[in-house]
Image 1: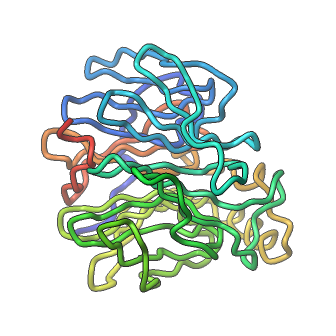
Image 2: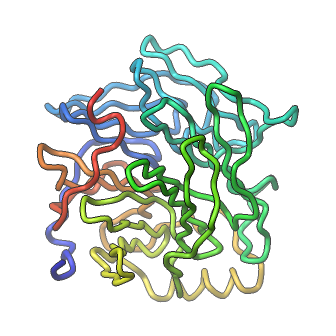
Length: 315
């Protein structure tokens, strides 16, 4: 696939963004990013920006829906999935599952049928949650029949990607340090859980996307590593901007069960500010955009492969 992309080849898009953790790219050139001010920021092709919404939510993952509204995963302990309408109104979308209140939600994605895939990292509250030995994360699905849990026992569920063409659901387990794949039935049922890749020192898989060759691109928070994992398991680090001493400290804390949110969110690097997600855009979908936890803009570079069109690409 080629050599590693140097940091000098990385540019930046946007300005004064507030925790742009999740980024979506569209066919017409608009970019949408989650915004800590409680909504979504639109970056137009001409560079102008607009904050849509504004609330007490802590937006993490976002999904653009067919009617132009957004589903927002609320990371705060108040939790839930919320709907941001084009006119700026925000209302609850999913607040409970089987009669139990839905707490902090990490991520949400939609598919071609308009279903919502909801990723809950943990049912615990507070900052002291980052453990390798606690598997209380899950994936839920909202469809025409309601909301149900379709995968359990995940170690810090992060982003997922329903690959409808191949009948798979990919999901990152951040502190399980693995990329997991399920077989996905037409009704959304999941089976045949398989570990596609495992990660080591300093890598905490967060965001992901697929390319047209069937490879999965995984963004690791803290290490600022972007890794492409080919269908045959071959992997390539495409980008890296790490501080070895910082990663050593995080590893020590993780294994001592003392790793907390403020520690993992701290950014120590040359130019990248704690990468968290990836989206492919541009006319050929080879322009990659990278969300982050601590940046105020989006890193961007030309990728060696075209990304799969997200479901909203043709809306």
